[in-house]
Image (tube, rainbow over all chains, first blue to last red; front, side, top):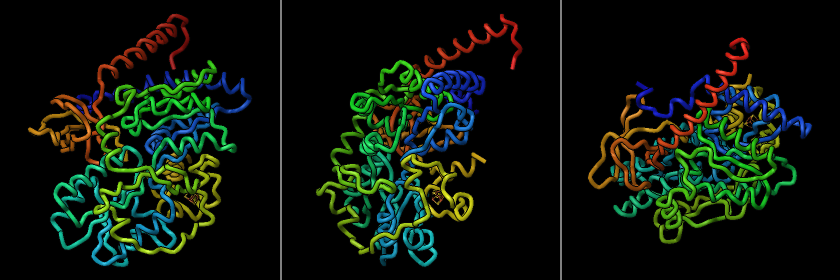
Length: 371
Length: 86
Ligand code: SF4
């Protein structure tokens, strides 16, 4: 029985949801009237993008609220040059590229991992990097390269896999580190003069690692309110209400609306592991290009498990897909419908950009849920 | 990538390197290296095969109770003023 096994089922209660939607609409209506425009809130988590679209909240609240997706889909923010590198790795003899499923259909400058696979490259999908280490142990004749894509939630899991490989001296497993950090990209958004975001919904699971206090700079330095949100409708509505309340009082703060999972100081075990495994590195993001210290590279002591040290396939400069506006979608500058290719040349069966590939991508969410 | 459904711990190994979780009638094994002090009966949030945090169920119940009270008050107000139910 799902009711018994999920103590948080009540966070999906329809009556409670309707009640909160009314309250949010009332609050947002008052604020919007005062400002003479809709209130713009950005979510920076792919799971939120999906949940807000799928539950219909984006449409139900659209009279006064512009719920805009930001750079929260890990596959989508991965830069073309990294994707090209991944595809080049897969083409190396004896190498199997191991990855989370979302990545394989993302188009690079020339084809995707999936197409490379059709051409004979070895690409394998894993649910957990730990499974890839196991596989490498069983197949010592092949090199397994795990694609380290994701934010601070995924990076500790990758770090564990590296430790496991190091502990067992597995020399045919390595990681291609393409992790991204959420705080530097929030800073980039907050200092972009072209963006006028009234408030943020912060990623629930990244925040279990980072803790609420990590985001205080948003209110303290930039005067922007934000709330950490869970993933059920009641969670999302509660967080939206919290941001609207802060906007109404004019006193920005960062509040935790997902207290059942997120602590003030985050997860210290995961934080220690991150600090022991990675170092901050400048990273390229789709839509943002180079963002200083926004990525995670492996520390020198893990060099033996660093695919960028072990293999260095030369790839030509990336070719951008000129008409795809994924970068602008990820910055919140446009919504997917404003891309000329949306639903025309670009759809889930034939995605032109990563925002249409991943279920967490804004284009895919708009395609499926906003007709 | 981030499935939000929590799982309940139904078994643990001696060194606490993994836990068996139950959710929606399915069980799965997850790594517990990223969290401290797991016990049978805890609810865990899982990411890519590893538990990343324990759920604070008391907090969850408390928050729901507050909303339920407000909702009940609203229902009461609707009935009293005789406004038609939606
Ligand atoms: S609709 Fe397709 S082409 Fe347009 S921005 Fe989205 S992914 Fe790119």
